[in-house]
Length: 100
Image 1 (cartoon, rainbow, N blue to C red):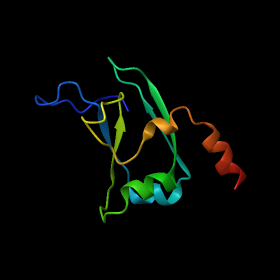
Image 2: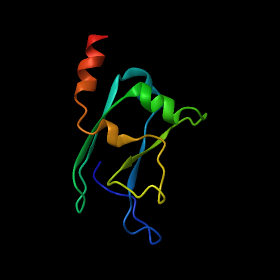
Image 3: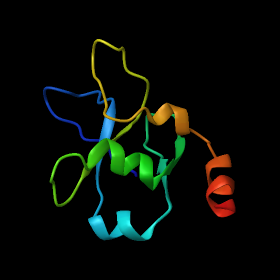
């Protein structure tokens, strides 16, 4: 991910939106989100697909829009459906999935 969603109302965004096709959610075991955007710290999130499905596919959206954080937001400012920070640099997730 290399570009944030900046608007006049939100010149300093807390997240980027990523569109994930349902086929990707059916074929993959994990997603690795490498967020490298100029002006923000780089973050790598290693998230099991089951966690993404649980958070984002409760609705019937054909293409889930996943909001991946750029930085930690104040709790009162924004609430994301998934706490990506639990999965930052969580390479152990890959090991656990390979063992199953």
